[in-house]
Length: 349
Image 1 (cartoon, helix red, strand yellow):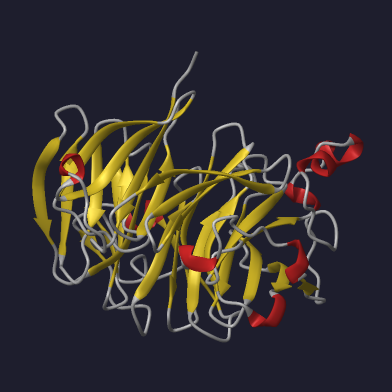
Image 2 (cartoon, rainbow, N blue to C red; image 1 turned 135 degrees about the horizontal axis):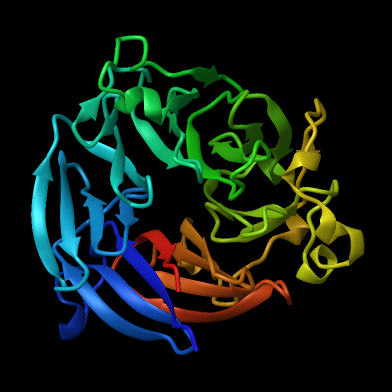
């Protein structure tokens, strides 16, 4: 059967570790069918949103450094340290893993060696690319979302205008903390962003129009986001260590995947999302709480299994927790790393 693999990274070493994980900063696990550690990549401390993986390499931005560490997956070692003009605060891959897109402390977007002028007023906190690699999206503590055209940025005859965002969204009122993009390659594709004030916005990636707004209970701070593989909803990680599932096609949070899988609901797609001026209030009672208690700390990263039946969350205490979506409950702690789990990625089987 196919094996499913997981990449996890820590942002600092906060606990003593046994010899096998000494100096380890990035960890490769076989997640399914059996949880097994496969490789350790050393000397890395990557902040949230600062790790990207393709078939051959792992790219990791470093805490408080203007460099990216490049690791060779096949050889299992560090291949290069790439310096940049300023500190890298987030990165991702585009064009089938051949183009590295980076956000910087100074508010710039870097496409490997193509760099824009400062567009954000403050640091870029997250960067994402749509499934077609036509658009890149950056969010910042300055509360703005910028939409960029990758073909324009990479054009040989690039002009100052082409190195500027094609659209800017100002729907948030506080620092934007998380960003994720849907999976559709059609005009139905959307993106989701959240801010420190507990507001989550779903928006059209082409027009920038806000499709839906969600308000978390007690303005709880959102620390991470993940989209359902079928684009039927999304998952929120909170500062208190809990997670929540949100279903697009109802006004309430659905605690069970059984409701997502019933009848006409399966025939819906993101094109049914319509702009609305009425925010949806999310109920705290529908959050999922770790059975290990509140000592896990905030959720720093989220990832979904390839089939969408299992949600993984990385926490500041080093735990990687598996949640069973079908039963809406804590399943197990699959690993405990020696530092905050700032990045999680499920690899293609």
